[in-house]
Length: 314
Image 1 (spheres, rainbow, N blue to C red):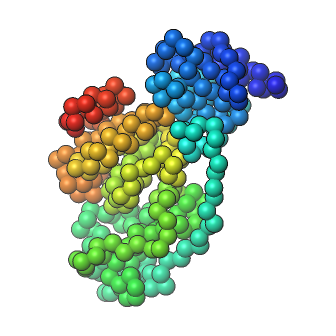
Image 2 (image 1 turned 60 degrees about the horizontal axis):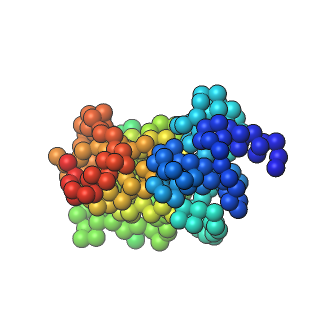
C-alpha cells in the first residue's frame, strides 16, 4: 500500500471509524443510515462508495469526506482527490466502460444563421423565436439558425456543442405548424446538450426541452429521456454537479420521482421547482422562471419516500 493510499484510509478512519478489508474494498459503518454492521463499501481505486443497506452512494469519495469529516480532512482530501468515472452502481466494482465510435455531425448545408442580418426570407423564422419570448441575445448565445429549404425546410435549428466546442446534435423544430413538429438528426441523444454553455460550478437546472433550457439559464434539456443512471448526462451530473434544480413538466410526476431518487442516491442536492401553473418552462418569461426557482423546495430522500407513498406531487 502506497503512502497516498495509506493517508486516504487514515482520513476515512478518522471520518467513519474502523473498517475491514473485503476484496478490493473496505467496509465502514454508514454515517447516513448508521446500520450497526459495516455496510458502507469504499473502493479507493475507482473513487466510489455505496451502502448496501440504505443505498447511499457516490462517484467521488471527496463528497463523503466533505459531508462527514472535519474541515481539515476535507481540505487535505481535496488536494489529492480525483474523480473517476463509473457507470453502474448496481455492480459497483465491476464496471467496464465501452466507448462508441465518434460520429462527425454537420449542420445541413441549407442552414442559415439568425444571428446576423435578417433578410426578408428570414423574417418569419426570426419572428417565431421572438414570439416565443427569445431575445436577440438568446439567439446569438445559442447560435440559432434555420433552414428555409431542403430536408429541414421551414425549421428552426438549435445546435448542441460538447465541452470542446464540437457539434454533437441539433434540434430542428418547425416554425410553420407542420404535422411533425420535430425532425432531429440521425445521431445519438445520449449527450449533455450544449455542454459548452454549462457552468458546472453553478447549480444546474434540468428541463424537458431546449426552449425550456433557453429560458432557465445554465440548464440542460433531458430531451424526453428518463435520465437513466447509465446515460452520459446522469454520469456528468454525479461527477460534476453540486446542486440540481428539477423543472420538468407538471404532468411528468413519475419521471420526476425516478430522477429525484437516482440523484439523491448519489448524494446530489436536489431542488424541485413547481411548474404546475404553466404548460412548460418555455411558456414562462425568464423573470417568472427565476421567481419560481428562488421559491424551489429542497427534496430529501425522506421527502421522496413520502411523495412515493402518497403518490402526491404537491
